[in-house]
Structures are given as structure tokens and as C-alpha cells.
Image 1 (tube, rainbow, N blue to C red):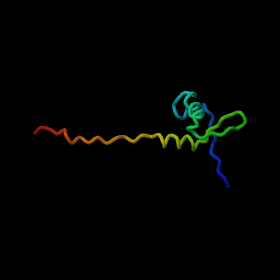
Image 2: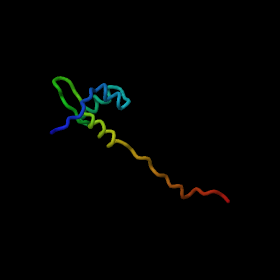
Image 3: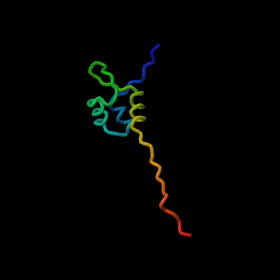
Image 4: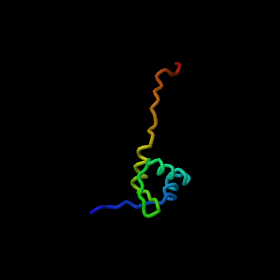
Length: 72
């Protein structure tokens, strides 16, 4: 049995990402996110949004302060 993700509209994706509608539309145009054509409508699977966020998450850098020491 095939499990189908919930399909989100461009507006819903923009809201989820905290951006304007223009950003997910650009991701679609540049083929940087998976999308589904339903007639003339474009829908983005919820898992594609999760994958996009995971792939573009930047981990904080650990800064080593070897040269800075307190004076005694």
C-alpha cells in the first residue's frame, strides 16, 4: 500500500517557511523542490518541504578560543 503525503499549496508552503509566496514559486521554477502538477495546480508534498528544510539547515560552528586566556 502506498502512503501519500499531504499536498500543500504554494501559499501553505510559504506560510510554513515564513516567506512570501514568491520564494516557493522560485524553488519550483528552478526545480529545487519536488512538486506535483494536479491539472493546472501545483502542489508540494509535505515531505519535500521537510527535506528541503533539513538539507538547508546550517549547524552552528564551534569556535575555539585557544589564544584568549585570562590574566592571573
